Every structure is written in C-alpha cells, then in structure tokens.
Image 1 (tube, one colour):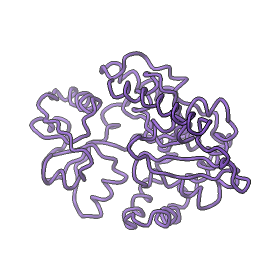
Image 2 (cartoon, one colour):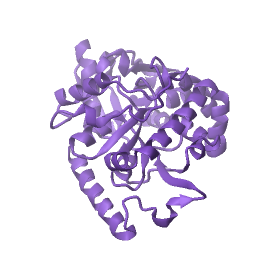
Image 3 (cartoon, rainbow, N blue to C red):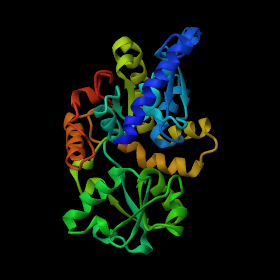
Image 4 (cartoon, rainbow, N blue to C red):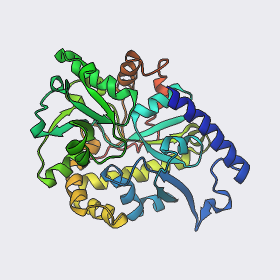
Length: 338
C-alpha cells in the first residue's frame, strides 16, 4: 500500500505545480484550441503495441478530428499514466483494472471509461523445456516479476487448489529485463501477455507452456488494459470525454474488422516496432477486443466487484472498493458494434 500513498502525494504535488505554473489543471493554456480542434493528451501505459492500435487508427483515420479533437499520444515516462491522468497532466490514459482498483481505494480520482480488451489475456509462461505444465510445477522454480505484492497473491491463489505451496517459489524482481533473456539467464517463468510476448515466442520458434489466469479463477478475469480519465474531467467536460471515447471506439472497431490494415497503421506510426510481430499480434488480438460483449469497451459491475473482492481477501486492499465510482459505460457509443 505504500506505493499508492506515495502516488497520492505525488499526484497532489503535480496538480499544485501545474496550477501554479499554468493557471489551469490541464496545462494547455491558450494552446488548448488549435485550428478549431480541442487539444488533449492521451498517455500510454508502456511502449506502443497492439493494445493501443485503436488509438493510432483513430488518429490516422481522422476519427478524433471528426469529433473535434487533436489528440497527442505520448509515452508515460517515469510518472506513469495513472499519475498523469489523476493530476490533470493528461486528459486520458491507458491503465489496468488492478492498479485502478488500488488507486481508487487510496482516494486517487481516476475512472475507467472503456475496457480495451474484454478478457484477461495474461498468464504465466515458461519455455517448454523447463517442464512447467501447471501451477503445481511452480514449486522449486524461480519466478521473475516486478516486485509487486499482487504477484505472490496471484501465484498463491492458483497454486493452492493444486495443493502447491507458493513459499516454495523463488520470487525475483527482474525489472525491465526482456522475457526471453530472463528465462535463459535468471528465471524459470514469468507473467506475460500472450498477445505480444507469446506471439513473439511463436515467431521465434520457441515453444512456451502457458497457464492463463482465466483458466484457474473467474475472479482473475479482470479488464486489462482500460481507457482512463479522471473525475474532474468527467464532471466538467463530459462532451470531450464522450467525443474521445466515440473516436477510440471507432478505431478499435476498425482494428476488429480490418486487422491487417490496422497493423499497418500502427507500424507507420511507430516504425521502430517489429512489423512481423505487430501483424501477427494484431491478427491474434483483434477478435479479443470486443469478444463476447455487446459492444467494444463494455464493462460489467460483477467483473469489478469480483476482482476487488479477491484483492481484499488477499490483503491487497485496505477497504472495499466503491465499484460504481471506479468505472462508467456512460460515454460508450449507444449503438452496438456489429
């Protein structure tokens, strides 16, 4: 919980500095309007990848412009998307249900406005030669992560039903070390998103064993990633939030229907990306954006409640989450995507 206490303090400090330096919470000043478009900032959660394709499509195809917006898509830097959005340094961002849940309980006023992907596509992966075929096999192995308490809790929750002991797992922090380097040098398995790292393994010809979280617990089928904004933005400028969400929805719908063209748009926008990986990842991920939901972006209260309950039961939250304040479907286009 300490990290979120520090986060809350930094958010308040950043907001104060912004107001002092610019006279506004957005930091845009007179540059807010450009050529009749309202300039807003969209901050990513990580380096650009196929989780973000719909945003780049919306930018390239003019969907944002049609909604009266000039959207600047930026990298998060050290502050992170949650902090930047909460402190009005950015109007929108990419987040995840797990971090937003923690933030809300700590009083940080960010809100999920759309689910980018309907179901959790993450899980624990290992090279096939290491023989890790189920959570039971984690015993005696080294796991590489980023040092968050949630990692041990997730490991424990999927190991316990198999009568396996999480204390028999060596948990190491590997920071930003590449998965493929780490499993050859330091660890046996790690937590990955299959849609990127798993697809990269396929392209490398490296067979992985994968335990998806959703195969072991319904409560771990949470939304990741999500689009986020903050309470002040939603209250004071709902028109812009609705406009942004509509354009993003159009972008992701394009990526659902035309994954090849969507991949080309992402590659054009971020030429440093591996084009082969982007195209293969997009083909795998595009059907999963909307999946079984009635429309792209839809969020269900039970998904938020189930995961928050799981976090509370595992000592990861100090109190219950007020679910209705954590997310909203209000700004999604009313018509179902078909």
